Image 1 (cartoon, helix red, strand yellow):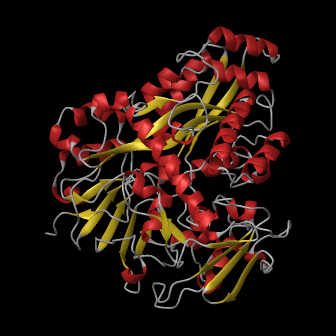
Image 2: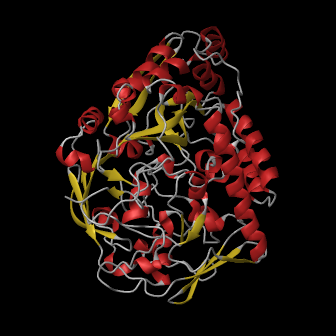
Length: 576
């Protein structure tokens, strides 16, 4: 494509997503609006922050991985990209439609496509530096992309492995191998050229992901890099006691003249990781002392919804936007009993989504999901694929158990983050009605995806979710159901281990379409086909409810990154 065509495509993607967001805000969230769980005013709480002070982040878990190669879990991807590392392009820091637009970050523009969108060239800005003052060069971005191929660094975005024209047996730089120039070329310190297997018209969006952040080879500590990623962003790590506290301070070599997106208002960011979701809510509702300068990392505890709704002063401090994420019950299709389609459909029909919705906070915090793709990716309207009653259809579930050779039901285990155990219990109760006996395996959230993504520790059922990496179904269905991205460990994409060559082929066909509307229709049709094979049960489409302290300013839910508070813009009203 020509440069002009690429820009038109980017505009079309943003316009499609903007229309969807508008439709969803007026329809899918109507119940939430009645309960008042939407961000107040213009969507930004507290006005424009001042420079300085310490922003406190109250969390109920450690980060699973801040290594940019392995960071593919929300909300830590948002946190890492906005504070510690920069990417070739990034999203604007604005609420609503403005935040869906990409802008140059490390790069001078949104990329120069050639060879029919199979080759993409980016040039780096002048004056880019790491936390020690050394220059950021194109070879450092290439090195981090190479790291994403390493089996020793699993769990990160799969786009480089999926798109690049790389040797099939490439194992990453930790094995002493470099990608050839036929995959990535760095002709000079400020130029990087990506050669793709097939046209990818959205590649300017792809490079917003942390895979395309720089990592200098001399600073790489392999599997320990997550403990201190070398900063290219506005902050650097001062101290990090895993599971307890992370302290960020300013990176004196970050130049705001090269970075129009990250405002970096606070002097320091302190993340307390020792709390429960209930503790976080109680402290922010009370709004005392340093908690006035704090924001929630943990979603609002459902038990505290009434405390927020009934107090206008607290409700005014709630950030709550549609996350564009689908919560799902994944089934491991690679082994019994879920290698049997009829038994998977039995689970589909047995689940009481109404009970799950209640456990997730009720209609104020979640809408019932009826497809994998959220309404924001299907034109703003939800599609009810199976038309199963909200409470499930136990009789139909039993018919599928009979057809699957298990008329008396069966037993299995469900892995859930321990912060979502109540949701797991709702699924356990609804499946039991059909004779499916579930044992719950509750694990710490920081290791949940490691457990679910390892074939040796994965259980029959897993409670997961998926959010688009940017506003395109190309970042949803392929990352969830493409069999070619499955790995034995660190399998954070296709957790169901679902394999259907026809589905893989259709994904490739759709990816080559240049007509955005035709691609959207094709993705929706493929969503229905995969639903019929039932590798996972879509449960709810979530809102992201986050409380902030009374001295916090510039807080809003980013329309990308699951509606997490955008760390590029948040700060304090005043510094004491």
